[in-house]
Length: 66
Image 1 (tube, one colour):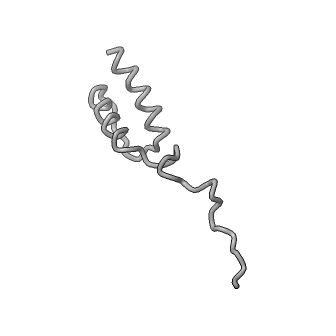
Image 2: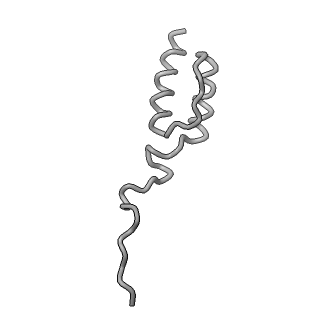
Image 3: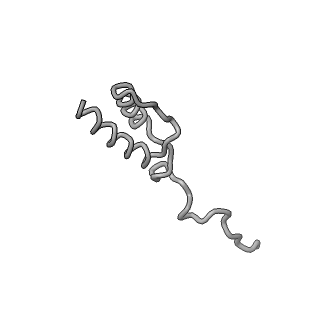
């Protein structure tokens, strides 16, 4: 029997599809792309889900005030 080994990465640090650090979802990308086009802001396709959510909120405010 082999001795259990310690995982390379702590399971709490593993990025899961629902984690805030995961790449933004397709729906977020679509919404963000549309908001960027509407506000003249550049689109960044490298944002995480959390970053995309913040950017969507900020651009939504800008779009509403225009």
